[in-house]
View 1: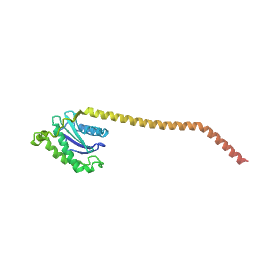
View 2: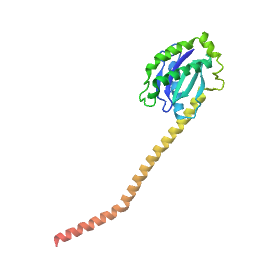
View 3: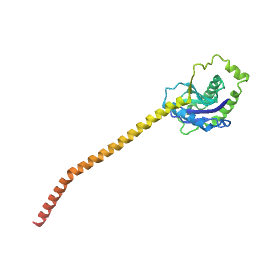
View 4: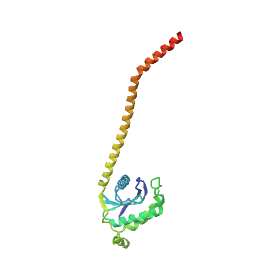
Length: 218
């Protein structure tokens, strides 16, 4: 069964829509939502990921498709047919593009298209029972194949992202430390110049003062 549905913009990972009633029967649903958001973040960082993928996580599987800079993601039971999961995402994609396509790039706040939940819930109901005649026909549709879609483990996918985060964090730290070092170097150079020229300035000041006093007296 479909347990979770989320839609996000790939360029920056901004969540656009979500199934509001999803996951009520899933233990640790918040953990899986956080994993989904982490996947969106990874996709935003790594633009060369496949446009379709399945990612195993515990007793569930994330399936996603990317189209038009948007990622459509669902989480299903492992036993749920992969072909139905991707056809469900295709239905969401087609409707989301039709209704909101012109506004996707300009969306500035999270869940700007939260009203799309109505269509998510309606479509999810159509795909819940795999034994309906409609879904059996979809499973037998030879024109829609999913055998070539890669399946990976969530630790493997997110682990790559964590390494990239660590590299980014290290780079930021080195940049910050370089700035601090440059500031300290400038301070030291300034102090060295002061120590070098301060005696000369004092002597010149004394000479000037004596000359001024002498001119006043005479």
